[in-house]
Length: 321
Image (cartoon, helix red, strand yellow):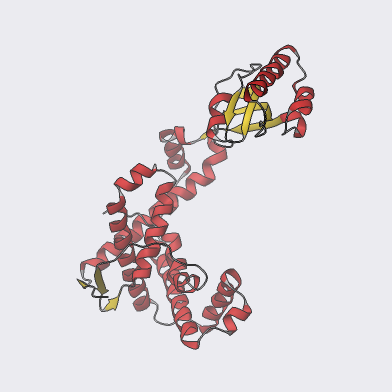
């Protein structure tokens, strides 16, 4: 089974989920139709919802809305499986590390209050809620210790392994294509004749093509004339797509036609372009080493939870709530 979770966030979210719900409203409307118990411990629906939210956020970075929709069922199943495995790992950590120092729990509780609330919030919390949160904190500390124990013999990647990874994934280590451009922006008023407005924009463009001092013309005509309309260097995605499409199609020294974006009507000029360039190995070696090490640890934890799961009693029953 491919693990889609990241071990480094397991022990944090396990106790944060109870606390953060006091400050955030869950917008997920998904109905969980089955009640799940894991070795006698009930799996809270909120834990599955939390996993689902995290997975959706991660997948949105790499998938289109259509792809997300097509994989909706798979993502929901992954969230369910991840939540089950989080409980299994927490249960195992309680066996291996049954006692956690109260000073350690209190320190983490104080950190949690600072991050998600304040002293007044803590003072007004019901005692039962405080106990639940601190029990969750104890679980998080156990998990941290348990993960370190599981991963203590995971070898760090060598320079040769890092270099091999770099060579295999060179396309991932590219600086973005960049452009240095200026623009003139105008928006016609509601009562302005558009034909007259467009004619004036064409006249401004003609001036730009004949006069090398773009900044002077921008200061005279543009409604966005800071720095003489100079936008500096920027990569694709820094501006709205309709602006990028025009500007990145121009060559240095070229002036665009009058074109429209959601902000108004533009005339753009590209001064310089910088193609995507490979990033040298030495600049990314540290990140590569960490990524490989994290993946190895994640794989080790995955093997551990698979072994735990072999003897686990996971029971699903219809949820009548």
